[in-house]
Length: 211
Length: 112
Ligand SMILES: Nc1nc2c(ncn2[C@@H]2O[C@H](COP(=O)(O)OP(=O)(O)O)[C@@H](O)[C@H]2O)c(=O)[nH]1
Ligand SMILES: [Mg+2]
Ligand SMILES: [Zn+2]
Image 1 (cartoon, each protein chain N blue to C red):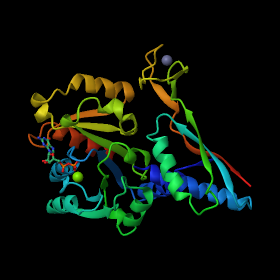
Image 2 (tube, chains in turn blue, brown):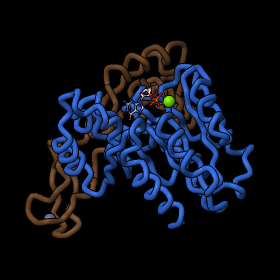
Image 3 (spheres, chains in turn brown, purple):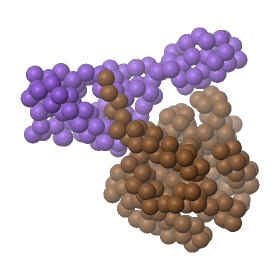
């Protein structure tokens, strides 16, 4: 009997060991295309950049557009193009991390390829996963794509500024998320108004202190 | 989606098993797939059928067994089969911890 993802999982375990040895925390940030992952990162980095040393790894199908946006915030960024691949995997992360001075880092944030299915299945060796679900995607997504919400330690319900213009039911989304994953941390955020971002950043900082 | 990656891995595992057994032809590959994995069996089979051409798995068939989601309570210890992703214990105020449903396994490789 063999694990179909065994090869990936073995390298993920190696990554995890290396990250722990160097005391760097790694977050795997997932979510649909357009949910606001890159915008959230820009906002998060603006609040963090002078406090902690961060590197962002940007997973993208073909372009470097997101990486260019992150670069503007003055944070080092590494681009991985998956050339159509729908997710990042552990060997990709291992390869780019080999060129990093991990001892000098506090946090690595990986923006995964926009997709609610595949990234959830591939362990990168991260300390924890977080998923961004935007209000415009609909409140039925947690039960439609349960795995990604089950795997994530935190979910950001982003674009809450758009709540008045949609039929998104916050209470029902919160309820589905909690029954699926009773310990999940739920953040309600807006990257346009800034709502909820301080709470999110405080939680992230705590994750760093706990290491 | 990622079924292509899974199909590649399955083929690698099967070819490896065949080589170890000095077999030249793979007949059947048994898979165990949990209900909580995001795998579409049809897409997986399609990918596999493309990849297997001109390999010892040319005629190999995928036989899939699905594993239902089951979870055990962290308080009363009872195990439940889940239908609707409700991870609260129906019998006490405990939380259910996933026990099965995440399997992605090659169970057997039949070759000759
Ligand atoms: N109204 C609103 N728009 C947002 C918010 N967050 C991101 N956006 C917009 O959503 C679009 C997609 O954002 P982006 O960060 O590129 O999404 P990604 O594909 O997940 O990285 C952009 O036009 C953002 O300006 C938000 O909180 N509210
Ligand atoms: Mg992006
Ligand atoms: Zn119980």
